[in-house]
Every structure is written in C-alpha cells, then in structure tokens.
Image (cartoon, rainbow, N blue to C red):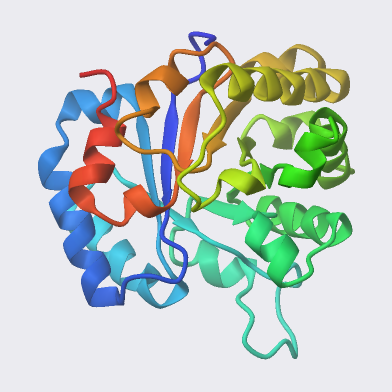
Length: 257
C-alpha cells in the first residue's frame, strides 16, 4: 500500500441501532481505541439518519477522533422528495463521508449507475466525500464477469468527476455474494479485483489513482481483517455486522495488534 494511503475502516450500521444505542456503541468503541489506533487508521461510523445528530453532538462534545458518515442521500439539494435526505442537511451535521451505490440500494431500491453518478456529484457539491460501492453478484462472478462489472460501475459512477474531486474519493469493493452471508472473497481474490479497480481509476485519473483508497467489504471480521489488509491494493474495510458490536469493531480497527 502506498505510504500516502492511510487505511480507512468504516462501519456501515445499515438499519440498526436507535440513536440511544448508537451513542453507547460509539462511546464504548472510543474507550477501547488509543491515540496510536487513530494515527494508524481513519475510523468512520455510518449510523442511521435518526442517529446522526446524536453522534455528531457526541463527537464534537467529547472531541472524538471518529469520523461521521451517512448511508445515503438524494441527489437534489431540496424539493418535494418525501422521505429523502439532502446533501445540505448532511453537511450541516458535519458529515464527512456518504456511502453511495451500496448493493442494497442498487438491488432493493433499484438505483441505476446514472442515479449513483448523480449522488456522487451531490456528495462533492456539498463538501463531503463519497464512499463509492461497487461489486458483482454470484452469477456474474461464476460467469467470469467480475472485472467487467466493477470497471463499468467505477466508470459510470465517476462520469463528470474531475481530478480535484477524485482526490477525496474512497471506493469500496463489496462482492454482493459476500455481504452478510458469512462468505468472503479470499485476500488474493479481493486484492486482484481492487487492483483492477485501481487500474480503471488510473485510466481516468493517471497517477492520482495511486493515492485513492480502496476498501474491501463483505463479511469482514476480526478473524480475516489482517490478511486482507496485508494485500497491497486494499486500504481499509467497509464493515457491516461486525461494526455493530463495539468490541468486535475495535478488534477490526486494531488489526495490526
């Protein structure tokens, strides 16, 4: 991994934890982490929308070094979009990162590459950083289409995104068949595909691709994180189930120990 690429480990809590639960989880997580952990790894939590204000207040009040992320946003900044959350709303909560294009959004809610591209641009427009998710289904993997799928998703999601914006980009490779299933790609497979993603980024952005961080996501847990992080193209993890428990998430973050 390039020296400039500080690992980033983000917890995607999905539709879990009330705002009260979320406060306890972040407090317990921070209690287990040391200054050297924060120096070695950028730590981000992505709670449900209802918990964002509570976690922002906790982070600001206690001066925690935890970054705040949101799980989604709509691509318009305001308007008649009942139930949606806009970029300006998140920015006013000091949100650092927004997850865009997660497979659950693509598969369950029908988000297309075009929608994902609009959301990426909305994140940048409002001064935040996207965590762009890409990944293949089991059928695509078995058909040998993994590389074509992830390259296409990266290319389409970043249409109209210039180099100055791409400096803040994080890409998360999440094979759909490994999300929440207990299965995960081998470190070698994950490194191969993240390498292909970096090559696609290099095609668009040249040498800047060497400083863009690429996470792996899909049943990441304390038992496999160290092997994944040892691979040269993997710069962190987007963690689902293991991030809901502060003890487990702390062990993932402290994978070096």
